[in-house]
Image (cartoon, rainbow, N blue to C red; front, side):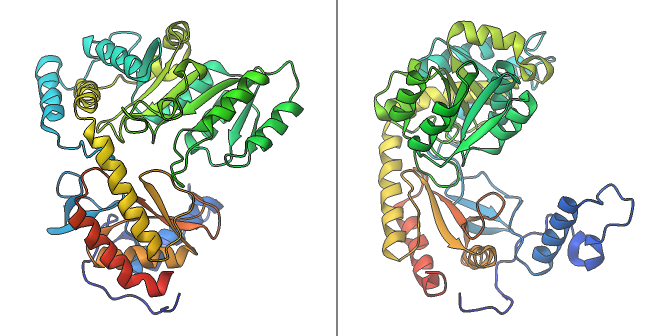
Length: 426
C-alpha cells in the first residue's frame, strides 16, 4: 500500500448517523453508562473514526431498487455486493405476485404460525420449497437466521455434540449457544480434521455436523460427498446451510446436493435464506415430514415469532416458479462469474479459493481494504468491505458478488477501475 494520506474524493457517501459522530466527544462513554463495556467502546471508537475520515460506507440508503445499477445521492452506481445472484429483484411476475397477495391477504397475518398466522400462501410455499429441494416437507421462518436458530434449538440440547466448520455463519454459533450444546470447530473444509474430531467423540453422544453449501465470505463449496460419508460412518446427523447456494447452485438451482449428484435425503436438515437468490425475506428448514411436523411445535421461532407476511410468502413462491421457467439465468450467472473472476485474477488480485459468484478480493489489512472500498465508491462502484472480526485478522477483503444481471459492458467498466487501482492494492 503506497498512499497513506487522507482521501479527498468525489461522490461523497451519505452519513447514516446524521452527524452524530462528527464530534469526537460522541465516542466518549460516561462512567456507569449502559455502554460502559469494552465491545461498545471499541465499536464507538471505530465508527467515529471512520465517519469523520469519510471511510464509513455501510448503511448507504439507496434511492432505487437494488440491482446491477442503483441510485445513491442522485448518482448512478454499479452495485457489486448484492446477493441478488439471479437478478430477480424487480422481476414483474414476482412483484405482481406480492401485490396480489397484499390485495387478497393484507399486509400482515395477525398472528404467529402455530396460532392464527397461517394462511394458504404459507402452505403453498412450503410445499413448493420441499418440491424444489427434493425433501418430504419444509417449514418457513422470517429469516435464514431464525431458521438456523429453530433447527438447532429445536433438535439439540446439552447432551449432544456439534461439529462446525470454522468458517460457519454466526447464526449457527448463536444457535449452539442458545441450545446449550457443546461444539467443536474443524478446520475449514478439512474432512480429515472433521474425522479426527468424530473419532474422538464419546460414542453415546448425539452428534450433528454443520457446514454450508457455499461459504459466505470465501465463496467456496463444502466437500459434501466426503462429509456425507463421514456422517454415515460415525452415525452422526448432518445440517447444511444453503443460504448462499439455494436457487442457483446445480443445473436447475436446487442446491449443493444437485451440484454433487447426491440424494437430498442424505442430508438430515437443510436450512437456507429466502433473501438472496430469492428476492424476498425469510428462511426455511427442509427435511423429513416427521421432523418438520415436530418443529412446528418444538421450534420456538415458529410459535413465538411472527409469520411471514403475505407479500413475502407470495414473492418467494413465484421466485421459485421463475427459476424453473427461466433456467437460462443460472447459465448466465456462471458465465458472468467466470468473466469477472478471471478478469480480477489477471489483474493480480487475490481471490482466494472461490468457486461461486461470491468473489473475495483479499487485501489483508483493514485500513487498506477500507481505502480501496472508498476509491471504488469514488469511481461509482459499491463493493462491501469485510474486516475483522467477520474474517480473520489480516484477511480483510471486498466481498464482490456477481449477478446474472451484470451486463458485459458493466463488468468491463468494473475491471477498468480495478486495473486503474491495481498498482496500490496488488
